[in-house]
Image (cartoon, rainbow over all chains, first blue to last red; front, side, top):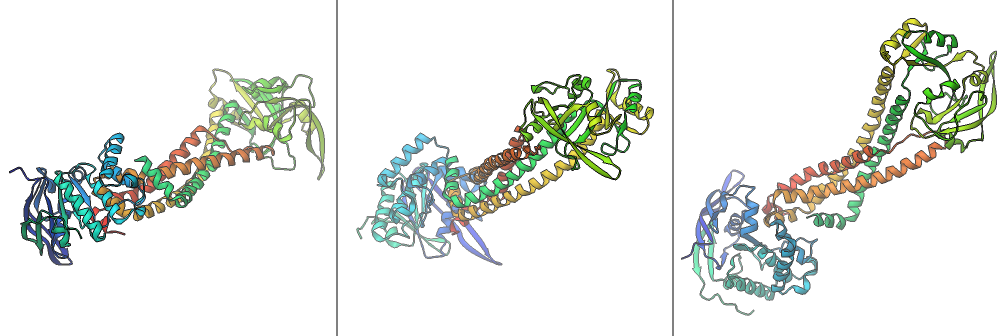
Amino acid sequence: MDEPILSVRNLSKTYMQGKIPVHALNDVSFDVQKGEFLSIVGPSGSGKSTFLSMIGLLDRPTKGSVFIDGVEVTKATDNEAPKIRREKIGFVFQHFNLIPTLSAFENVDIAMRFARVPKSKRKERATDLLTRMGLRDRMNHKPSELSGGEQQRVAIARAMANNPAIILADEPTGEVDTKTRDMIVELLRDLSEKGQTILIVTHDTSVSARTKRIIKMLDGKIESDTVNAFGEIKTA
Amino acid sequence: MFDLIIRNITQRKFRTGLTVFGIALGIFAVMVMGGMSEYFNRHAENTLNLVDKIQVVPETGYLGGSIDESTVRKVNRVPGVSDAYGLLWMPYDVEGIGLIGDYVVGLPIDKQGPTLKDTKLKSGRLLLPGDTYRAVLGSNVEREFKIKVGDELPIKSKRFRGTSSITHERNFTVVGILEYTSSDYDNVIAIPLETAQKFYELENTVSYIWVVPEPSADGEDLAKRIELSVEKITALSPQKLREQVEKTLVVINLITLSSAILAAIIGGLSVMNTMFMSVSERTRDFGLMKAMGAQFRDILYLTMGESALMGVLGGIFGIIGGGIFIYSMNEYLSSMGMVLFAITPRLIIISLLFATLLGTLSGSIPAYRAMKMNPMEAMKYG
């Protein structure tokens, strides 16, 4: 078996709520192979979003390690973290989180600017990604002029801009209607079939049901880790 | 990245406009007050360069009295003195106190060369032996009276009769006009000494004496020697004169520049306020940028670049506004025989650098705040 693209070892996170320690994550370990399409599910407070923040270097664990593409990212200093985020991770958020003053094209372009990609390459890549997302005619529109589904597709294109090792999607369908939800899940699934590793955090079972692997979390621990044989898209 | 800064600035036109206006006002103040300071400095420097002789003045000071012409002969006899000659100084406006504006100087015709030193004629000629009611004018006098060579310039003198005085007026024919020097010479009305003494009824009297030292003589020592040899006078070497003028200039510079800097700092505070608002509004954007892998320097560049650009824009507008104001004021004042401001390349460069620095520094605290944001927290914000 190939070396996993994501490896989580004994990951723990404890917050202090006043003087009371809250164990948001408790000794979590698992591996993800390249091209996997998996979901992390669980009720509110189960630790799934905290877990995503640890992998994405948006927060620091209390204990344990995360390896992405063989690099132990939890050891990264504040100065090294941006480079790892740029090169290894693409984020898709529930609220789309596009920069409102920039067009769809520029929202994708800006991710590559931080990676110091030359202008001509950025233009080519952003156009290609938005075309793949079916947004060729909407490239010059601002987020306020796009529908929720279109905004999330721009966010996916942005997440893919720097060819990350893994895309982390936090409730990517939380703010869209069921038709758009299906379209987004199908899009992500299509990307995973082309080799892109995608990890979705969701509490929507109809989303997790379409992923190939489901990790269930409860009280900061992995309750179950199952391969979903039925990971088929069902039309709504 | 610069296009992102431009975009952000132009997307908040009104706010940017107000901030830039605040900076521009500050820099306007720097230009105007600095222009005044520059003028005084340049004027003093040019005047001191022209007045390179030892000044012998009455013991009571420049404006405190007069010297009998016999004193000129006494000074001339002091070892180390190459030449000494008296000049009669009177304000043009005999009703005024004569501290500013035009003044009449009666000077020996044969001493025009050493007195005017490098000052060149713009038109006409210098005074010639045999000239009486003739005058050579400085360039400010020409502008004030819109006068040319061959025209008549009326000059008044006050003649005392017991306890009362009679004002007497006489036309002097303009024979020459000097080039602009940005010194006291721009306000001079030079007339023959003998004519001046007669006209002001101050025969055998001069206001002060100019002493040309021998090439080997030390100015400082000679001034002391003159003071010891001649009674009731004070002798000031060019160095001593420069020291005294520089002391006065320091005070003027401090007053003008500190008020200008204060105004500019107020402008800087407006940039800081704007940047704090701008950063707060874009907290989520900065968090997102960090999640996308933006480095500290990217965030710093975007925020500080924005404030620096506003500083530069404010600086440019302030310099243009200040320049227009100074030009208009000088035009207006020159019609009254005065110039108060000077625009120098140094002043423009300092104003622009100051504006940029002000903008950059004002943006540094908000930028630091943006830079230190936790991406997770920032994205939850707003």
